[in-house]
Image (cartoon, rainbow, N blue to C red; front, side, top):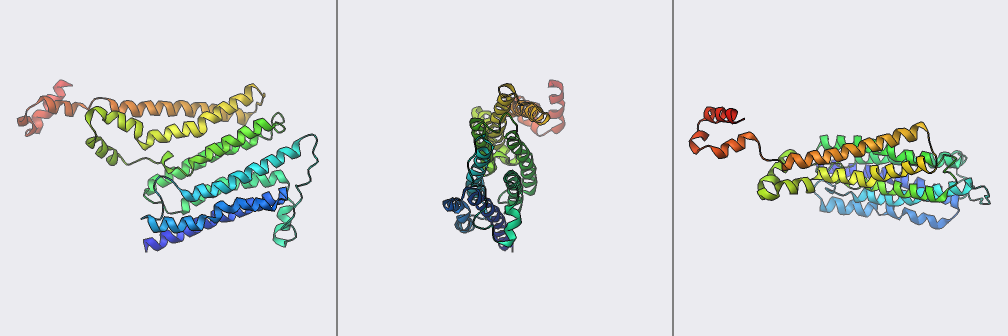
Length: 326
């Protein structure tokens, strides 16, 4: 029964990704007039093959540290967002001779006539916002694999926070100082694509249970235990990847916009302060984890080393001697 449920959830999540991917690529074909852009659907077209392999070779219908399904979905929508944003940039230039914003292929279908009449900027904004919603819903619907429900709930809440920070990058493209500068927009799109690489990497937001970390520390050599845990635990990797993939680059980008491009508004100031605070907190957390695992073992264990075997058999004697030594 559990196996059947996992298969149904796998089908539902991939169907959700496929629908949004097809809609995004369709919009790219509409604004560019290039039928070759349908090749962008290669990513979502491979979801069926990926699901077959995943269900066949995994126990819980999902891989542990990496999600090929989310990666294939992003391989379709990220290039599509690039095409749509660069098309908007072209339309915002002072000399604009492009007429590719008119709908073509599906504009005569009754179901799509109303959608085709939307402003191109509204189209792009809607697709970008729904992309983050689809990522959260798809991660929620897909089989949770080896994650517990507690870890999954934490992962989903973190995804929502990441999505809000990522979407603010697109709001900066609407600023008068930025909307016609191709280099600044390309850098912003690159940071957007770079930050989305957190979503396929489940390692960046999940951590091992404490009993597993304790088991590893027991099997590790005493001199290397603290170094191994602090440098290789999934929590530290999570913090490092979050700083490197999102908070650090976003902070530099926003500081550049504020200082060099003179983009000053309430949202820009808020998200810049937020990035500064998060980077400081993440560095502080890494230091805490490092010193927590590398410090000497506690008073009870040190007392055990200093007392004989007879004191082990008498709990009151050990407790009293520990209190005196403390």
